[in-house]
Image (cartoon, rainbow, N blue to C red):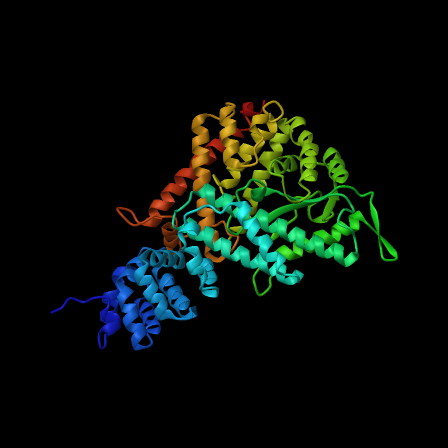
Length: 524
């Protein structure tokens, strides 16, 4: 008797449920009947059935190695139906097994990436081009492509939609490279940050040009304006679904321009411009959105003006700036508009960040920041099963950032070498200045890369800003597999959780030692 073959699912006359289960269960499907339904939908006529049968073994092998085999096959079916000619697709995949592997891992790893491909199936041939897949896209290359496209679009709405389209396509490229481990975690963070800088700069240009035309304001009126990136974007370490933390800055309040029969002051014009840029980036259209924008790091937070002049920022920081703002400004960086004005801002902020004493009161303020974070997490988890927060939990990303930033602010006046925006570079600089040990630097750096990788793998699932690990079950297993874990002596989830616990416990130990109330020697 001929042994059963996976192709029997498509070529045998009729199989019962038990036979279907026997053929599909070795590939890790949770619902073999659903997987069979996907295959039968794909093979809805004789030519399609024969063509699919030619790649079925390869397809099943690749799907089984993805983070979620059921999800991978379901999205493969949807993608094939979205293509112009699925038989041509099957033939192409037969000749290009590496492309089939890319599809399976992408579909099984990220519904968000899968939906991008289903929406635009032709992106498959672009993203799998070796020159795209295996090379880093330079910022200048993306800028040139963007400039060429925007020149052909006169309409403001169409220009902004092109930014959304480019964001979607480039995020697919970065996500596929990340899932296939074709780049390091640091390269992924840099690529995401570079893309954001390029798109924010383009949004500023589009909005400023349109607003100046609308009010008949010359291009050189009102001096300079710049968009400052803060947070992870400022540090060049953005996530897949990060908000972008921005601050808007203009040169002077003391300018006015005739607007028809009236007069418009710089402060009012730039208020309108900032509202326009924020909406352009965050508004959802049929093409999606560019970025969610967070403006809470500006003076007075939500209660403050949307934009301030350089003098306004200086007055605020001299009279009312707080310790947490000194930490936040470590990452400030101009990403759009007048970069010279942005550099003037950085020079203005430098004494506020570094020259003020970082005394016991400031140290207690940092401890208070962490206590408030812990309290918020505790309140959110009341009545729920305890989850692990990669960013804010004990030993998480925020503890690593607070260690680096507090030491930078404390010692940056006499050791300018440690004034780094990027967390990894800051840790290395702190080690080089003997402000943390080589062992602490290695422990914190390895944990940071690990936790940022986990954070990205959580956020690339549904383009959601989440930081909590799945508690258990298939979602946790899928997360572990997305990170590259596979079953051996221990299951993928068990291996992942063991590494997670090791990294976070080591980070928390260092954090508690450095910020110990009885041992403030690091800050003296």
